[in-house]
View 1 (tube, rainbow, N blue to C red):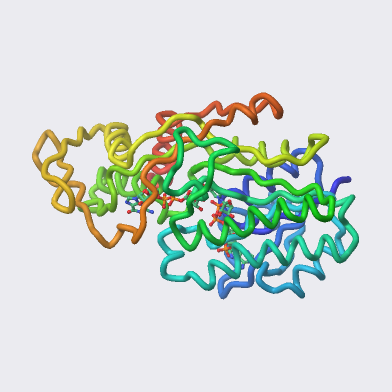
View 2: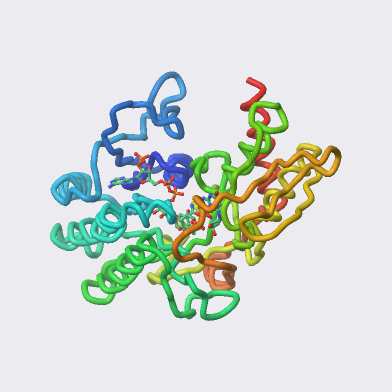
Length: 344
Ligand code: NAP
Ligand code: F7E
């Protein structure tokens, strides 16, 4: 039975990846941070109650704590490690730059150093959750594995260190260590302060009369949004090939925050029109002129990433991976789930 460790297992991707690996017959060790409440909504079903899976083993650990990470890795000696743990919110990284660096940069060092110092170089494969945020102020469109990076946040700068460290441990010590440079991927399990989840939650609540307005930041920002369950599958694929290489994973489409809002409202039967500009722009219901969307500068970032769109043809050629779910379909899935939750 293959053994995998997932850090960040209670997050959006970690929860889908755990389910995916369990279905493949893995013994999955999920690293969980201690928190004051034990409720882990995305993975509770894997280790509590009737649905629990005996092959899922939760363990306490924190990637900033080298001792805990080394003790976990040296005991388990896993075949694969997926490092998904992160302070993953770009806006929040401007408020918490130190914590973001400790988790997203030094956390990666702690894992790689443990693989090396335990002599697991040839037996443990390592996946690093790299990100399209590395491209930041983009140097070319679309972005591929050779596009130069230009990080625009403490989050991206920390992830840049982890990206290069992964390559360095591969080249210096022969570890099968790879970067998945994943573009934004979303799902009903997305944290609710990220834009897709925030918009669909608000739209359904507004439709149900439970909320007045949606307050939003930069409407013009454009992202390449994919579907998280399809993106975790390719993390696994990257560790199954003969040679370690880095891959861009994306849908190849880009859409603005404005389109995201418009499509989401349309799916609940509301047609949004826009008037004004900049901070004074508003979105209103065409039927009754009611203002439903307002710009709030609180959500602006000190430095923004205006446009991300990826070219994942390398992943298609080498891993045989292609996305099935694109923008419209993704928003439909998320809205449908939100409506179901609201009807409960
Ligand atoms: P997420 O939902 O924010 O999950 C991150 C997980 O990391 C959470 O479970 C969190 O624990 C855990 N964590 C945070 N600090 C930790 C620490 N010091 N030690 C151990 N665990 C810690 O993120 P996601 O969307 O699933 O993304 C997974 C990874 O991919 C992240 O590294 C992210 O930066 C990267 N990424 C994401 C995207 C995307 O679009 N989703 C794109 C590219 C790259 P709690 O649950 O206790 O908070
Ligand atoms: O913002 C704009 C915002 O927070 C998307 C993380 O998973 O993907 C994610 O990072 C865009 C930005 O994701 C609001 O300014 C406007 O331009 O959903 P987001 P992100 O920053 O792209 C990358 C690939 C990661 O690696 C990260 O871990 O939407 N925006 N108004 C807003 N964003 C938020 N959150 N809230 C707003 O009100």
